[in-house]
Length: 465
Image (cartoon, rainbow, N blue to C red; front, side, top):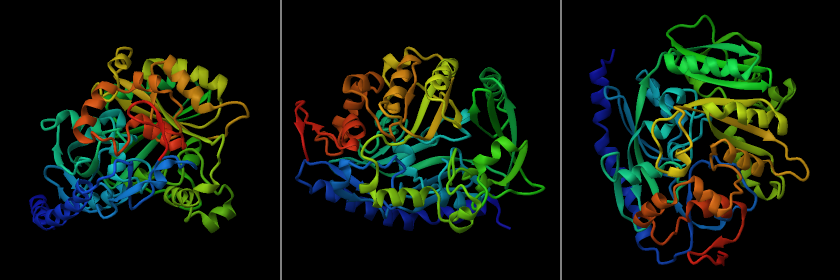
């Protein structure tokens, strides 16, 4: 049997070979940027489709591409220090399989298997350990970043600290993430999940707060099925299980939540229990699932949408959105939601405030005292004639001092956007890493280019690329 030190030594022998290959990849990308003379926007070509909501008119599809698809290797797993160093195109499926051989898993594992490490940092990945640890980015120790000028920076809380903090949620607009190092946590082979049902939001929140303060479970998330049915899902690592459930074919995990009092899954299956859908799974019929259930999952759906984007709706797209609401303002937000939207289930992930993140404005933070947020996720809401639910969500979030991820459709005007995101800090880093704005700025990329709108030139005039 391998001892822990022997396992560590086995992995620590490999970095020399991996590092040479990695350095060659990084130099290829950096050279392409250094030799580039155009100031037209560039986008990134990746191995897997981006886990953002696909949009029919996204301008980024016609950009010149920087190919990152070969940045897909795990460089080092250190079982003693409990860290992993990897390239950004590695998927969480690959990381979990590799780290579990050492009885370890990433601390925050997003719900879909093909979400990449880099995408998790550039966007926003949370899951059911977030009530203890925040987002995946909060578990990261170091980033390697290639700037628009082809410079390679090593960033950490002690080195290029502001760049390190601002990379999260920047959607690739501050540079190219080429390597990251993050923490791992010890894991048992199985997870025992208990389901607690509450008829009121108040009781549901009290239960969340109890477990948040006691830190007596390993995993916590929930689903709101109606104004009178809230189910809290509490997971604990266990060495043995009397049975294990599988939700990768005929059965769907999200459909089991309101029906069970407890469940056992392997740790791997627990981490990706929502891979086929967080709140809804297709096909719905048993016959459809028997024929196609193994084929329909997050990756296949995103690849199809990306390939056939011309057939995506030009108007009134279905709503897929994650919003972050301060814990003390959740009742106010949900009162509005039950009254104006009333679409269920809503996925609920408690998220611990790890720091006052630099990418959000001081004005925004001034209205937030809560140590805990609730990430409320809505998937598949159909738009109604004459309404834009995305805009309505954005408006209501302003009333409760909430915010949202930018992975979906965004309709903020520029002034409102920069009242939420920290423009001064963002621009300070942008000048260091992308002074010619070839990666676009955050507002332009997520609120204009993604929708196919004309882009603003630095002087404020509209330009079309």
